[in-house]
Image 1 (cartoon, rainbow, N blue to C red):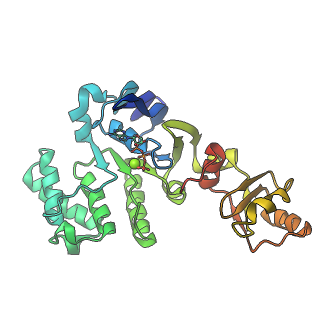
Image 2: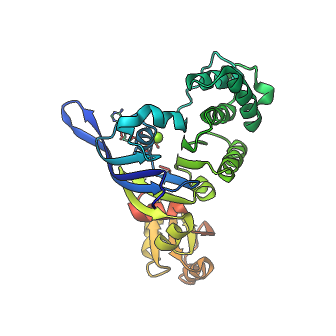
Image 3: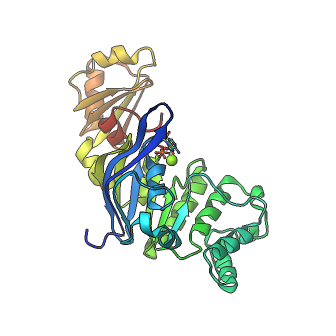
Length: 313
Ligand SMILES: Nc1ncnc2c1ncn2[C@@H]1O[C@H](COP(=O)(O)OP(=O)(O)OP(=O)(O)O)[C@@H](O)[C@H]1O
Ligand SMILES: [Mg+2]
């Protein structure tokens, strides 16, 4: 990828631990992000997503490997990189004592932008975040979804070419998530490069052109959402519930149905090209599940296949 805006080679981050060997939170990541691309890091708690985002955002130094952001090395050009990125951290760090407009205005001033420009920008971004009627409200009085929208708006104050979003919609209700997705689509249409982390499969499928599945600081797989599903899962999944105490026993009687069987604490997953045909095979063996559901494979199934664990624990 010759024009990559972000390029990581063998990227590592070791945290010091008292009385123990260093802890490798990021253990040799290789990835590139093209201009205008929407790139995702999908992984469970502790996978190293935020640590990676902090290194990309030039607020945490790497312990090893190479990292280039807009052609610059964060070790040597931290301030310049930070001035050209927009950042939406996992934890909102808005100033609760200030109102919405002031939060945007003051953040723009941090970047050394002229006051008049910041005032115009603040109004433009309040409209973008659909927070015009909250312009004069203190941040402490906003709902979680509104705070998240304001944080995203604030990340755009300096017209960044790259926006880093660490779990942009965690904790939001479905409607608030859809509003945020819509805002992010618009940014993408305008050519902004998005790098986001998430542990929501549907978010990754909606927003990411390409993603890496990360676990324990390593990349398990890389591709478009569709190609990851095609390469690592079957077309359909049959979900069966026999009751928590009966699933393990039922599973022994399902061998040979579908391509692969996964026994989870609350249900059994049968991976098969045709879910309905698999269900017929189940009932033909005289088994009576309490509930059965046929669905398409998702990134959750990819994750389960690659790590042996469920993404949402
Ligand atoms: N400052 C730190 N000092 C020591 N260990 C840390 C530090 N920050 C993160 N870690 C450890 O590094 C690992 C990766 O953490 P990180 O926050 O990058 O994960 P994550 O993928 O963002 O997880 P989550 O989905 O929970 O946000 C974890 O085991 C965490 O405990
Ligand atoms: Mg995180």
